Length: 118
Length: 434
Image 1: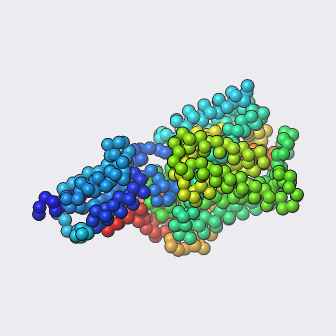
Image 2: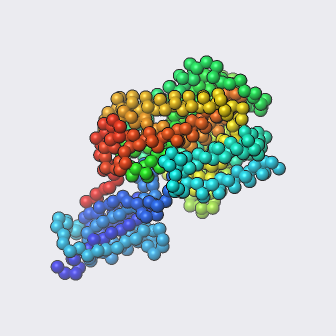
């Protein structure tokens, strides 16, 4: 397996559900076949005791709470940089606090991964 | 001079309180709920009012009306701006059916109880009415109590959700939906009851169909305010301008509503509803409103406590307040039971669903203050005391009762508390894009 086709797990953590939709659309345009989105909560969100007094209804709607979204996608190494740039373009400069962050992990073995869209 | 001192005191307590309250402390469960929802500020307000220290006496409270109007208007706008119909329609019809059923049953039980109870309004020494204030008849008083019984506290449910880890539980989802709809039902009922209580049109129109005129005026004022705020903020405007426009329009709208003896809560809720359903800066306006939610809520609690008439606090007021709390809990229980029998799909609901809806909370306090601001007489004073007592009692009881419907670690499905027939699932919000 060449370096360019070596799979990597791209993990992108963002704070806004609108950005999730934009990133997924961008992934499709990059040729990525799929991604899994997990709704999570950051450390600050768990430790905070913020109790909505009158604004609790909105929390039921998608994106209504201050949540964190984890996007997982196994991608070929050759398009990792493009995917990271895309995420940063949508979320803003990741060096700024609160915008989110992204990292990749090497994938030792993978089975069931669809071919990228050409 | 006393008004300036009163404003300073109230704002100081509210802003300092909003920093200290709502933080995690080690207390017994019920006391923690009281503390974390700020309910203790009702008692602080009571101490500052005519009941004890008399720092906030009746003339001072009248002078503080603009602050109260701002708080009421803020709450109404904040609630209304969440009512995005596109989002609400995503929920199963069963949620709405349950919300309407239990809300109506609760209202009917409370209204019926107080319509049947003879001479419950005490012969209090009422102050002479201010020009233009409305008077509540026995029937109106019973109906107002019914409207105030409908809301359920979102804050209490959020706390229980955090404590039990029940974020994805289907039972919690339906309870929070019902709590949202409860507040809407209560506010609509309040708006209609205000309209029914007017004997003449404030605009000097012919005295025909006065309630319809009043209702039209309230809705029109709300729509106008919402439209102006939408247009002013539609294009990109800096955060400071957004805050300025929001505060200015809330003060204008709530002040005009109070002047016309309409409910500022209802009118600004209409404004929020319009903004929520237009494409614009609703997210940013919502964030501005949330940023001042807690200090203004504490203002409401302090001023609610300060308005209590000392003569009625002990004795009859206590008994009536407890009776009201019991009737409301009975209504919620019966409403939940009936809804679980009538609407079984897509989720089978626990017959004890109503136990999760006992907490009454902030919206009821805002509504009763709005009512007390526009109405005078023994009925208004009695209702204020009864509702505040019921809010405190319900806040004490609700955590233990809600646990009967939502056991610990309720995430992951069935949420099978006492007699819970729920065999639901919690697929959460995970989504697969593959």
